[in-house]
Image (cartoon, rainbow, N blue to C red; front, side, top):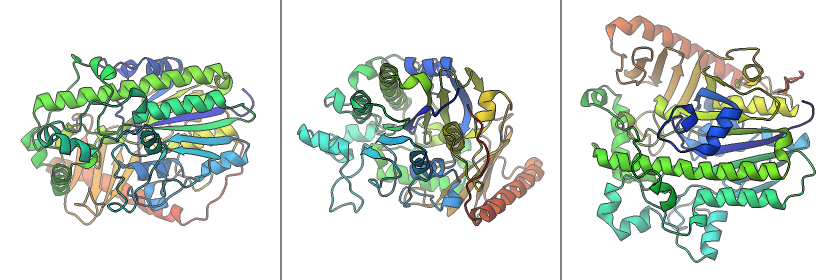
Length: 486
């Protein structure tokens, strides 16, 4: 298929891989995402490069790992690189919703941005030097509505707030929920636009990032849902690195994002939390379906690539943790589905891929050269059926911040069988045999029988880090080669 396809990149925030019915999550209600899976190509082993929003998004929009960008935390400044290359190639580039660029309102190479950031972000200017009023804040103010937050919810009922584990039904107008607001604004923009050039549209849903706050209508659909619950034992917790205990303490003390975490949360509270989370995903799914209808009405889908994914996932109680900042698959593995009418056949792959691999895939489809210093691997060979896989290992990095305060720097390497997690300057680490322990419950770091494997994997990891450091110092180049069309 010739020409430049319209490219629609939909990114949710903190969505687990096990949240799509068509990919095995029988308890989920996701008809729109199920359609994308049936008619498109699903990657079931997509891993992010960092378990925090900004570092992961910066990797995706620069095509590099965090160490190459020096973007490790949610406070590091960054802007996308390849969006402006699409603009130079004739694309009209628009962002609606969350991008998490720092600063929030930087252009980022887009022609237009309608910025919506975190749900529970502090707004008090005297309290927070990064306070920012986005499009959603302005709309709430125009409606004379007070945005629910950890402050309003705690003041209303401290005991209920602590017991909720971040789960609250949305009690304002349904269309003013941040996910509905973003979806509706994207549809409005599409309906108003007269297409004169190929479109790159990035839609960023703030959910299902906590607070887990679906509308009552969507929550009612999960009233009796048999949602799987996390299982973790004292022995598993005891074998975790000391920095995990500090992370858990921080989450309990500071109720980030309205989640008042607990050391041993009751099972009924965990079930309630997971039902709220699932309902939040279904609410986004509904908007994805409406977006696909709007794109179809306007003719964008005649030649388009629609990509659905998330910036990282959420443990939701797995391993005794909540939210992110760990290197478990529950945090690092995200959904990735690509849909197109005729550019590739429907299919499914369990090959290891990374979120950053979306970047060269988009550039190649747009006919834009891919930089020679990128470590991202195009998905085009897998989509075309010429390769079963493009990489045999995936990596993730994380540095100390105000929440993950127990370790200076953490790096993870994972292949089909083994995962190793190295903590800079520390005697401890993590090692899992994913073949016999897919749930990552038995840390083999100090297991004598696994010592040789641990040392081999450490050597591989150090070599990757050294090659990455060398590559990061090379001058950036645009690779002068013919892209593989999909």
